[in-house]
Image 1 (cartoon, rainbow, N blue to C red):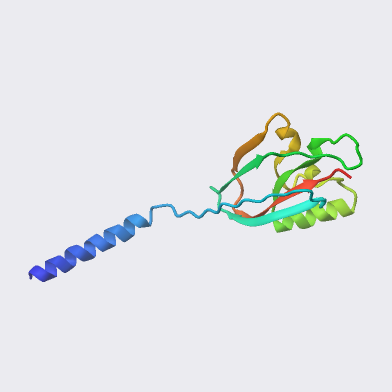
Image 2 (cartoon, one colour; image 1 turned 90 degrees about the vertical axis):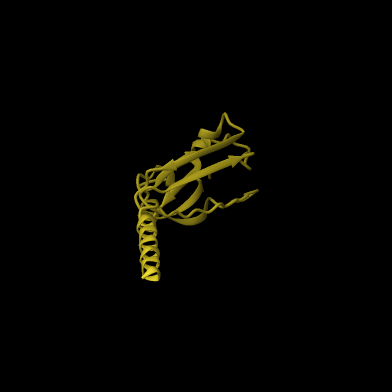
Length: 146
């Protein structure tokens, strides 16, 4: 009988632990570092991320600079980062093609994160964004300066 009570106690302990673990939140995270230098692409997709309704993304920008190769003044409000789902991206490209918008940053279908205008007074920028709908998003940089 002694071994039966030990087995029962062990079974209850294992069941209790499994039950309690069901209430612990599971999370997953990635840390990525990207460096861009002298890249003339107007759209630079970084990576695709899956978010839950409680997901968040932290972005840090350090040592940023920009210049127009034509020597004209640059409006930093036309360069920035955003998140987009695949469905939204298809509609944004269609809007660009039809001339409804001239820059991706004008679209209401994307999740605007920030433009380089937001970085004007900072040598480094670090911000966490949250409150997204659960979905797959692509982090994208866009430069709408011709």
